[in-house]
Structure formats: C-alpha cells, structure tokens
Length: 334
Length: 297
Image (cartoon, rainbow over all chains, first blue to last red; front, side, top):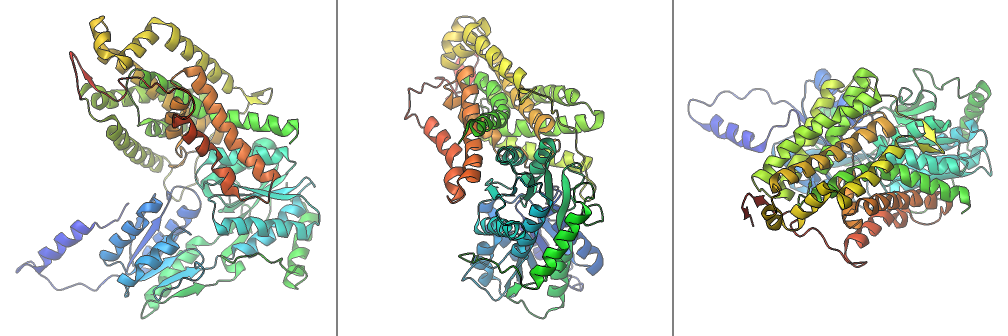
C-alpha cells in the first residue's frame, strides 16, 4: 500500500499542527485520489492498467495519489472508510465488487466523490457515487462474431472469471455474436468462478478443446493468463483481454480486446477535479473510446487472422452498425 | 458423455490435483508428527516466486525446481522456532507466515518485474506421455514412496509416534523435537515443490495470487485421505476431477446455473472433512506443542 497515509499518522499530524508554535500557514490544498483494488497491481491487466492511469494523473494533474491492492471483499468497506476519513476527495473502487459497498457508505461522506469502474447495480443510486458502463456487451457481441469468423469451424468459447451477473451476460452475448456471424456454430463457455487461478484457466481450455472448440476469448484477468497458456499448448487460437497479450502466448493470440483503462482513470480524475461538487449517475463512453483490438500495434496477428477473415469481420461490424443484427433479449439487465 | 469426455475429466483432474497432492504429501508427515502447518499456503507462494525467478534467470526448469528446497528448509527453521521450540499456536503462526510470505513474494516480484515493464515468463515443461505431463509420473511415484516411508519404515513409525503419544515416544528414546522438525521440513519442501510445479509445469509466469487457496486445499485433502499418503494422493486427484467435471458440465449442459457446478469440489471437501463418512482418527497430539520432558497445553 505505497503512499497510504494512515489515520494514526493523520491524527498525529493534526494534533501537532494545532499546537502553539507548531502551527503554520496552511499550504494550498492538494486534490487527493485513492484507488482501491481487490487484486495486485502486478497482474499485468485489469489492476495494472488502472494503476498506470493513477500514476499518469499524478504526474499530469499534480494530484496526490494513494492505492490499496489485494483488498479482500470483506475489507472493502473498512478500507474505503479509511480513505474517506483521511479526507480523500475521490475514491475509485476498481471493479464490480465495490458498487454496493460504496452505495452503503457514501451518505456519510456527502462532499467526497466515489467512483466504481463497473456498471450501476439495478435500483441503486446515490448522489456522490458514479459508475461507468464499460460497453462489455457490445464488445462481447463483436468479439463473438470475430471468434466465429476466425474459427476453423470447430466452435468458439468464452472463459469468464467470478460468477456474477455481468460475466454471465457477457458470455451469453459473446455466444449470440458468434451465432449471428456464423449461424449454427457451436458457441459455449465456462465461468471458472475465479479471476486469479491461472491453473483453472488452463484446464478449462482442455475441457473446451475436448468439445471441439478452436477459438477462445477470456475476460478473466489472471485466470485468463492460464487460458492463453492452455490455448498455446492445445494449438488453438485465443483472444486476449485488457492489454495486448500477444507476448503471453505468441503462437495462440490472434488479437486482444484492449481496454483503455489508464485513459478512463485519468479522465475520471480530471473530470472530478474540474467539477464543483460530487455527482452521481453512470458514464457511458462509446465502445471505440474504451476498447480496441490490438496485436503488437496492428489489429490482428496476420499469421492467425487471414485477410479474408479480417475483411469478413469488417463487413460484419458495418452490417451490425446498420442494424442487421438485432440483439436477442437478455433477460435481467445488470 | 462419451469416453473421450470422461478421459478428459480424469486427465484434467490429474493435472489440477498434482500441486495439491505434492503439498499434501509433505503435510501428511507434518500432521502425523503433530505439527499442523497452516503456513502451507505461504510456502507454495515462496516456492512459486523462487522457482520463477531462478527459472527465468537461468532458463532451466530443473534449477528453478531445485532452488525451492533451500528456501523451504530456511522457512521450516523459522516456522519450527514458533511451532515446535516456542510452542506457539500453530494456527496463528501459520496465518502470520502466510501474510509474511505474500508480502515477501509480492515485493520480490516487483523488484524483478517492476510495474510498467513487460512481465517475464518462462517456458513450461510440456513433454507428455500418454497425454499426461511427464512431471506427473515422479509425483505419483513420490506419493507411493511417501506412503511406504510413513507407514512401513522406522522413520515413519517415529513420526507417527510423536504425533500420537509424544510422552511415550520420548520415554522410548525418541527426540520429539528433532522428529517434529524433520517432519516440518518435509511439509515445507512439499509446499515449496508444489509452488514450483505451478510455475514451471503449469503457468510459466508469476502473480501474487497464483496459489489461490491450494495450500488450504492440501490441508483439507490430508484430512480427506485420513493421514495416509496413498489415500491423500487419491483424494487430491478426486478433488481435481470434480473441478474438471464442473468445467465439462458447464460446457455440455449450458442451461444450468454455473454456481451448482462451482460448488462441487468444495461440497465434496466439506463432506469429506466433516467426519460423516468413515471413522476419522486424527493424530492425538496434532497442534499440541511439546517441550522436552513436558507437554505444553
């Protein structure tokens, strides 16, 4: 927890500054931002990118930053309260897990801004908690189509992390996209139940390969690193997630769905710094602002995605924008 | 489900079960001697980071694996001071050791691969025989050897004696502290080798969260196998197969909610350790410290 200013230290400093002879003119107040994560910043993906955005904001905007990583679900409220009590102006909770916890405590800190890097939970809102729609479902539909178009015909699959409504809906939308691009194609998936178990990711691939799957997309962070490893060993294609993961499995990665997380964190901090008072609601950036297909600076690995396949995907996206592929009903909206 | 799917489940289960089996093999000695090594999770993590750094630096999976042994011995000495020589709570000490290991491994990894740099990765061992990774065979052989040693050798008898009745063992001339230290070293070596297996045979890279509860699974598997190495090995593979089964069920029965399948391995472990099935006789002096000449309560 580098940069973490503990409450004890804060209280001690407050007492000292109140003593005669010790008090001095208050310097200009620096805007303070805290980022709270449930996993490590060395995960090479989801948390690592957010950390980079935080660091960039510190350098560009001159804000004071702090972060807490590997925070267990049960500790989210406690850690967040710690930052709020220490007077942090903006507290970012990085992931789905933070939504309900922030809603629960935000009323106690009405002058501070909370931000969750996930969608707003259904039926819950607060004046000082903002959310973001990361356009996962639009991305999943496109990526399902891409997977189907680069498949040799065996089938495509999605491997998800924690079992939550968003992951299940992403899996369903991925399958819908695959079937829209190639009707009748086998489109399946596995929710491993874990974002941090690379062994499970690798073995989930084996189970899918046995079913005939030859293209896999993951959104499962560290578990996904095992997915890529398993795809490389099995000799099938994989689509990485969050960063360009071509170096993780060079022979398997056809492309990666790269999330502009660093841009997102930087933008949230800049926007909050500029606003007069905390706000609520959900931010909805465009799909193209948030996501890009990337393989070493190009869109696709030319060894795995041929020119006709690339053209087929471009045509699909064009047709999709023209409304040729209406999305099936999804049931409950997360 | 046809035969191919069943074979996939068994092979996947075997691969998933091997790290747990390795950790549990050592732990069965520790527990049989009366030492519950709750720090096994941290030991896997230390083994993982050590093997990763050594294998990445030397490009040798073998060196990466062997390098974890001195680290395990060092950790055993540290744990032994608290578990055995000072008679501290084995549960509290183990939990603290797990937290310490996470900090050490995380710090070492960040020194080796600072955030913002391209993460290093190593070439995993991918040689297979009949579709089974080659390193699985020595692990299975080790399981048989450990069973023979614990159940049919003088050393094994000494280990079980100090775990069942340390006073009687001491009266018979055994050095309880020494035997327990030897068992603890085996437990730590097993844990560290399991961490190395995860890195050099399965994943090829390191993350703080790579172990993800497999040390605790090993503790459960030891109870599941009733402190008998062969049964413990089978229990590890069985839990791996249940994990593999939930993958296959999700792929083949897509309409059902995944929560049902995800719970399978944990449900099996909970039932096995509950004592509802079969007689459960744990070592009588498990977690009970022993000071030369007197039992510490």
